[in-house]
Length: 274
Image 1: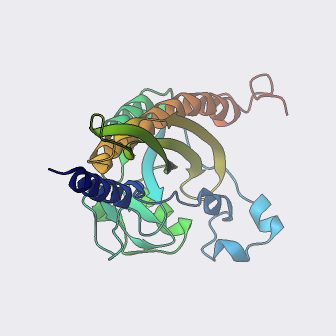
Image 2: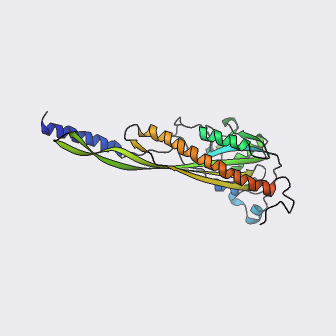
């Protein structure tokens, strides 16, 4: 094979690599806007955005202790769907509108749920399944109705916001020693960051008892080919780490909730100082 032929083959190979190397891994979707859960009034069925300041201040905690807790993962509309609007198969979701409810769970989520069952003054924890999710979710009130069906005093809503940023890594490869050396893109670095956020609300009134948040990061180096499969595994890992830290933060949040609203909280010596 002539030198010119070798160079032509090497150049063609480099074109193929460059053509695929610019693609980046895409996460299933974005987080839900949890701020919508902090906008409702006591037992008010109107749209949260129409409520005034006095109505917002009128919210009251009504949960009793020991309490029952319903847990719901919410994401932005379209989460887990491909550009054609179909499920990607990676996650199971229900409901359209302002939120999407995710019912499939990874190992990190199962462990987080188990930790919730061990919190003091928690009588039971119910994970919401798709049978209870309405086809349309226009506001947080639609989600609180799910908790009412489960007869849960409190609801814990959580969401995952994961981002991926891919950086190219170049390396020189000798196609034929002594004949040609070409710079080929053979590896990539992808920065993965997952933020898990949660808000604890009263099922009856929408009163916010507390919030928690945590972030985890990973930066795996991976091959150019089969990158999506590798990064999908890494995404699940980083989200599991974020959820583990979120569980720890929720335990601290729960300690504060019990101090303020739990048994004996009305005693001035027990209620935390303002």
